[in-house]
Image 1 (cartoon, helix red, strand yellow):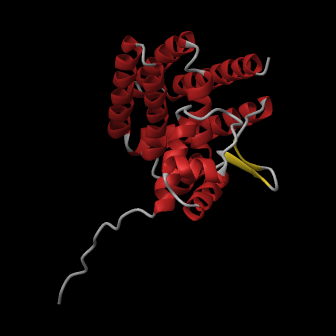
Image 2: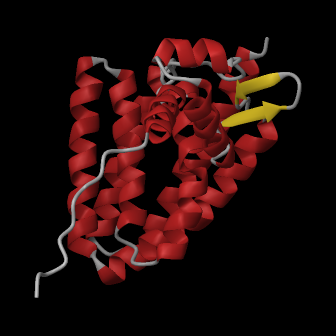
Length: 224
């Protein structure tokens, strides 16, 4: 009997478009609130309306674009309330994920955190603020990747794109925030290695709430 053989099928065109637009939003290539005409963006990417429409619909489900009937599609425009609510939900999920990682996969989690911190260090020394922001995202995703709870991971992924976009759009122009961030991440690794859960919760809370305040200030500044 021939065993079941698997092949990797090529990605659908709409999936390729979705991933490219997601990267453009998350990495601040596209601005908050920017209009995304199906014809203009499709022409830029060299695709027709159908895969473009499918991609935008999925991005809307991720909260990265807003589709307004009879007006068009726009990159999401966060409000101060959005920033507060994302930070609150993120803190809840990341704290739970970290606790589970310490119990289930401490070595793997520590290795991924340390690797991300090293990438952040290199980016910081090179003055590459966008690369730093991407590594920052990887650092926090390491908690979810090793928590062993698919439902927690799925819940986190519903906000991960918007959190990464806030980080890239609102912290990248302020290198001083990334200087503070680097020390906070290093302290979190030390607390994790020492299995000091109380300190780790405190550090994570301070980190996320400090980022929330910085994003809010940057958002107000952008709207002036």
